[in-house]
Image (cartoon, rainbow, N blue to C red; front, side):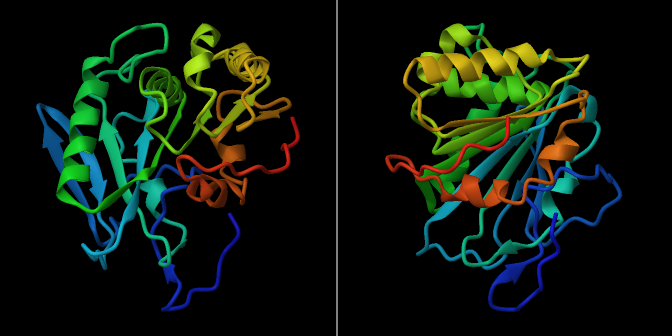
Amino acid sequence: MKTLKLTVKTILLISIFSIISFSISAQLPNGYSNNSHKGMRYGFFKPVDYNPDHKYPLVLYLHGSGDTTSWNLNWYNPPVSTEDPCFVLSPKSNIRGGAWGSSNSSTHSPGMQKTLEVMDSIIELYNIDESRLYVNGTSMGGFGTFSLLSKEPGRFAGAYSICGGGTAEHAANMKQTPLWIFHGSDDPVVSVQYSRDIYKKIKELGGTEVRYTEYPGVEHNSWDNAGQEKILPIWLLKQVKGKTHTSPDPVK
């Protein structure tokens, strides 16, 4: 991502968006803590200068099956403007594969149910702007993102999925949420057809807030490419539930 000039007034060294490196030895940022709920561990970031009189957005990040042993510290490295600081919740699955559920199921997985319980408790304890709840995930977390959008229609202001998947038949519940889908054309782990079908179905149903970016020749690690999309964090935080934000379609 582009390096931004740091200023005391506008920049805080936190990341909620970089997906470039997976360094488990990275230093935890101020405001970050490790916690647990009913046996599920999770990372939690509270803005350092939290003011209870100010409303804050909350970002939920769902990791993939391959990074269950890390705390996804890569999401806390690049600078984010202090003019719009966020709470960040990053649950850690106790199992590999399917932990966050799928849009195929009519009910939440146990891991997702616990995650929502933690998220609800954060909303209750802090001054969270419920018109600015966001969810995103990679691979297994991308499946979880689609699952949440299908089971909790209208709850999230914006979302994006990287190399994830879901069932296009449930796209009707996703079409009202601004959504950006990323996938590599040669993904051997999660078929790119999942993302293509969901995007196509949402468009057929009249969804106007869905974007799709496919990277030619890229395999499962499309998070490397998506991490270079400089507009991605700006786009996500711009979304507010109940408001429309049109923007040019990216290259497909």
